[in-house]
Every structure is written in C-alpha cells, then in structure tokens.
Length: 80
Image 1 (spheres, rainbow, N blue to C red):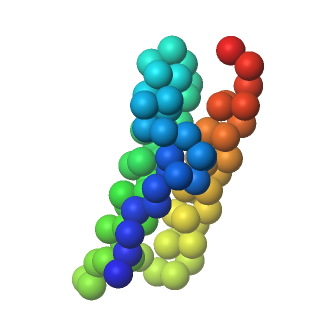
Image 2 (image 1 turned 90 degrees about the vertical axis):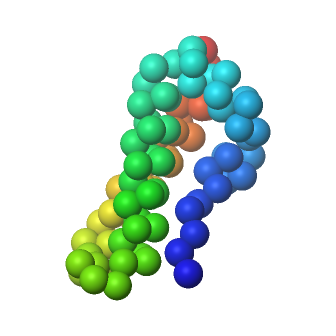
C-alpha cells in the first residue's frame, strides 16, 4: 500500500519550523510545493490499478521527487 513520505521527519524539522522558513523564502516554498505535488503523483501512480505508469515512468517520477528533496535540503542549509 503506497504511503506519502513524511518530509518533515526526513528533514528532521517540525512542520512549524518549515512553515516559518517557507513564508520567508519563496524558492523554498516553491520547492516544497513541487515536492508535495510529485509525492502525490507517485502515491497515485503506485495505487492506480488502471492507467498505471510504466515502471520506467514511475522510476523517473520517484527520481524527480528525490531531486526536489535534495534541493530542499540544500536550501535549508543555505544561510539566510
């Protein structure tokens, strides 16, 4: 059963900490939105019985999610 990733746990930050930072950083906000959208697409694709993505398409989607996560981590490590 597909499950959305808990980004906050992965980042070792609380939701409140991320919310504070994203309100001050439009790029971080954009990256977080893109990550969430891509994560939702992965979960949907993993749970779809019909119109499912091919294994290659799903792999690319997961790689895209990882790239957004890396950019989020980089952005959070950048001094304000």
